[in-house]
Every structure is written in C-alpha cells, then in structure tokens.
Length: 100
Image 1 (cartoon, rainbow, N blue to C red):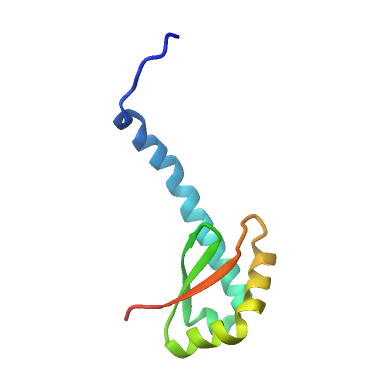
Image 2: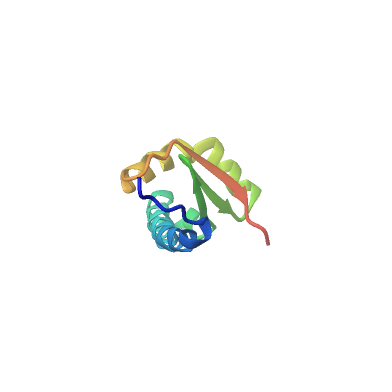
C-alpha cells in the first residue's frame, strides 16, 4: 500500500555502478591469487579473464600450455587457488587460447 511504481531506467544505472567495482576488485584479487597458485612460469604466460559461476577462466598463450595445465597441473593449481581465494567457490578451471 502506498508504493509507487518506478521505471527500471530510474534505478538501473545505480545498480550497475554498485556492481561494477566489486567485479573488478574480485578479478584483481583472483589475478593475484592465480599468479601465486600457478607459479611464475605459468603466470607470465597466462591471465585471468573471468569467473562464471564456479569456473575460473584463464587465457593462455599456447596450446601446449593449455594441454600442460589440463592434463597435468589442474588439480594442483585448483587446490592452490582455492587456498589462496577461499571467499569464492572455485570448482573448475577452464583454459582458453589467448588471441594474438
């Protein structure tokens, strides 16, 4: 009772402004955690590009590195990044080739 309908355009810009910095801050913290978890050799040849639900996506510079992570290093890196970034559930790691 007594509520006034508002157009979405009246409040959506503020909602988007409020969400923006948190997302950037999370990606920054994830990037730092990735660098420590992956180790300097992998960190120099990759970068965090996003987090979708519970999957961390990392762009890598070569198919060979993508294969190395997927076949041999995924469990180790996931365990380390989970320890480095306990605030977020990270269930999987996805590697994509970085565009050159």
